[in-house]
Image 1 (cartoon, one colour):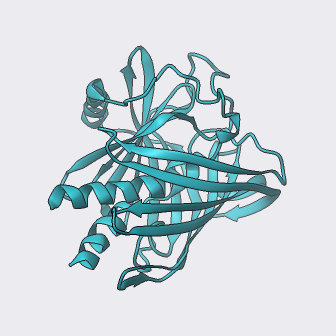
Image 2 (cartoon, helix red, strand yellow):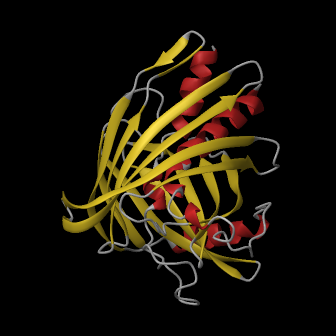
Length: 303
């Protein structure tokens, strides 16, 4: 029974990797005040091979991965951009990210096939896709992800390294001088009596030509929890196209209004780069941790 619960909840909610954090250019927060980093309707489409990044079972879904800016909203006098990610061959779970004009990720929503939504927040707004690292530089990042009420906290440690720039050949074109990063994440789910360890590694390539990610290779490490073990696997997402498309007006309006009761539980006016400027660009490794926490919350909710 325990194995079934984790298979249905964790593998479903852990699916979305860091692609949804790769849509914005590597500019410094505040560099273009009042302009904003996005435009509603922007879309990035990726060819996907292998399982969903973060899934507990190594079942390939393939298909396409779609990232789209679906709406904008106001919160405390600040503009928020709502970015949605989904898989064509696994449409039941949708994630939405909330990013402000200073390129800070403030919160994340996860909606499952039953329409149940869960909101997860960061202890403070985290700089989003700045990648201020030199070639050869390495950094260790420690942070926590919180449930809305703050009762559940998930510690995460990420080892970040930047490699030499490379040329990426994709269906969307040839991208020279793409910045190559490795993110090695470790975390654990604390169930009081036991802890479930989670390890994953992501190689990601970014290009200014598309203002974001052009390729990701995700590797999940094998693991074991009591009598339940899971296999490791690799999956790849490669940019197929990018551009501007239409967004349903009713959906955009509804999502915009939904932020009026956001409940971030953090100082939305704080500059995330103060005190820890090296956090730039590490957010790409945190989504799997977010979804692990979501799985824990849903397990507790259904008991």
